[in-house]
Length: 428
Ligand code: HEM
Image (cartoon, rainbow, N blue to C red; front, side, top):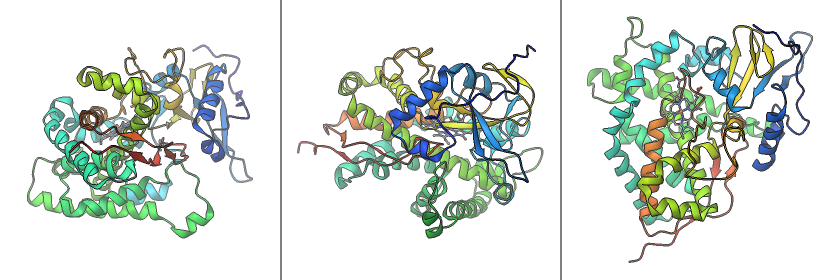
C-alpha cells in the first residue's frame, strides 16, 4: 500500500467548523452547511478532539469523512471500518450494552449477518408490497383525523403518527399498548446527539434509559403472548428466530424491538416534516409533484431524503491500516461518516443546495453509503412518505408549514421538535 507523507499527521479543522463542539450544532443550518463545504475542500479528513488528554487516558477524538467518495468507500469496507463497539457518537457505555444487549447496528460480520437475517426478509420490496394497502389506509386515517381535529403541530399529529402506526401494524402491537409506547420512542431518542444542560439532566435523570427499559419489558410480555399464539407479524418472527441453533435471549429480543421501533419512527417522521417545509418553500416543485404524483413521487422522496438527510452521521472504528482520502488510518482510529455532508458534495450533485424533485441520477447517501448496514427500512420509508403525501396533495387542503421547523440541535439526526402548520378546510 502506498503510504503518503501525511501518515500520523492530523489535519486541523477550520475554527468555524468544530464538529466536536456542541455549540456548532446549535448554529443555523446554512452556517453548518457552509462549514461542511469548507471541510470538503481540505486535502484530507480533519481531526476533532472530543475529550482532551488527562493523566490517566490519552485524548479522544475522530476524523470526519465528509466527501461522497470517502463515505461510500468506508461504508463498503466493514472489515476496515467496523461498527463495533458502537456507531453513535459517543459510543454506548459498556454497562448500557450489558444491560440492554447489543443492537445489530453495533455489530460486525458474522454476528451482524446472522442477526440481520432474522428480520431482513420482512423488509424486502416483495413482502412490503403486501403491506401497501395497509400503509395507504393508515395515511388516509391520519389525514382524516388531521382535518377533523385541526392540530397546530405537524410533528406529533401527522409526521410521527404515520410511521408509528405502520411499524406497530408490522410488529403486531395491540392497540392497548400503543399510546404508552409512542412516548417511550420519543423519550428513548430525544437526547441522541444533543448536549443537555445540567438543569435538564437533573430535572429528568435517565428518562431515555427508563424508556428503553420499558420497551424491553413490553417486548418480553408481547413475546410471551406470541410464543403461545404465533401470527405472521414481526414479533412472532423475532421469538421464532434461530441464531446459531438458539433462540434470541431476552436482551437481544429487547434490543431488536427498540431498534426497529425507534429507527422505524424517528427517521421517517423527520423526513416527512422536512418534506412539508421543502414543499412549502418551493411551491413550483410542489405544483410539479401534484401535477402528476405517480410520475414524480419516487424522485421527490429521494430528493427530500438527500436534501434533509434525517440521519446526519454514523461512526466507525478502524480495524486495519488503510489509506483513505489522503490520510493513513491506523487500528483504533475513530471516523465519523457525515451523510449530511456527502449529500451536498458538489462533485456529485449539481447545485446541491437546490431542492429538485427531478434530479437524476440522485445517488444520495441518506440511507447510508451501501455495505452490510444499509438501511433495512429504506423501501418501507419510501412507501410511507409516498402514501402520506399522495393523500395530503390529493385533497383540497392548501397545506403549508408556518415558519421554520424547531430543530433539536442534534449532531446525530436532523430532528425536528415541532413544525407549526396550517391548511384551508376542504370545501363542504
Ligand atoms: C427516511 C427514513 C430513513 C432514513 C433516512 C434512514 C437512515 C438510515 C441510515 C443512515 C442507516 C445506517 C446505514 C449504514 O450504517 O450504512 C440506517 C440503518 C437502519 N435502518 Fe434506517 N432510515 C430510515 C427509515 C427506516 C425505517 C422505516 C426502518 C424500519 C424499521 C429502518 C430501520 C433501519 C435499521 C434496522 C437499520 C440498521 C441496519 C443494520 O445495522 O444492518 N430505517 N437507516
